[in-house]
Amino acid sequence: MEEDLLRDEIYRRLGLEKGSLSSESGNDWERAKNEVLEEWKRKEFENNEKLKEIDYSSIDKNTNEFKFALTSASHKLQDYKISIAQRNDLSEEDILQLIEHGNKEVIINLTRHQILSEEVISKIIPNSVYLAKKYLVEKQNLSNTQKETLLKLLQEHEDSYKDLIYKLQSTI
Image 1 (cartoon, rainbow, N blue to C red):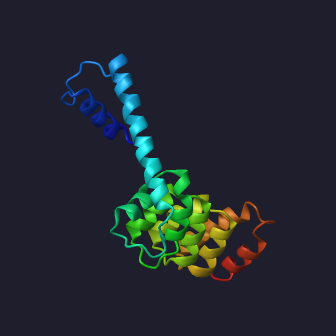
Image 2: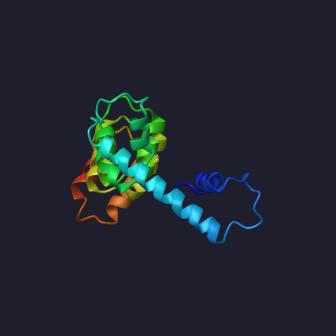
Image 3: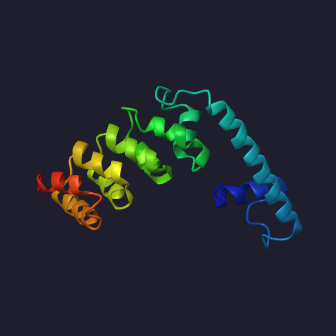
């Protein structure tokens, strides 16, 4: 839960106007904080149970379930993000959300199934795994700067990336 949202909920739980306390600590503050966090965990768990039944490759992007799965930082939702990354109707904002909260499988699926913008590719390059790099070279339209950056990264581990280095050098 975000810090500001948590703070708002604690004030609401205490029945006070936001910012009215001189100190946001003490027994009542901690009790209210724990209650809010427990309630939030319970709701997230209930949402996770409902989310398991949904096909994220075809669900409408405007549903709350899709938006929750897309924006949640929960590790439990990574499988849903992997499915979402394969969709052909993602906006650049959706893709950036997936990059921010996604694992390596999400990044791999994005590089494999999406046509990525220069900005998105630049975010992916530094921390990508082998398959993501492979799909960047094979499936994405890389700028010369991106090719050079990627080539430098690949050359740091030349033994592992010989085939990709060769493919990339042939395009420069």
